[in-house]
Length: 99
Image (cartoon, rainbow, N blue to C red; front, top):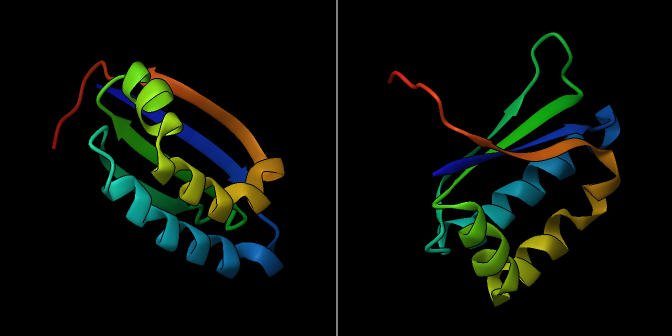
């Protein structure tokens, strides 16, 4: 399992549309066999900062599985307007976790 972290800097006037776009895009993540879970969080001290955290079964599952699927095209169409607001988009491996 790997975790993809996408950090965004979203202007205040776009934040509602951004959140709505990810609510709609989430349906395509949920339908992917490679996506284990995802969350969208907003900064408290800096409310224009958002993090999208997606757990994938593997980097290959994300890059060759999801990204080559029809679901990705629909997902990307919804979030593409915010692509230029990305500060970071990387995969991380889980070291330790406590629920």
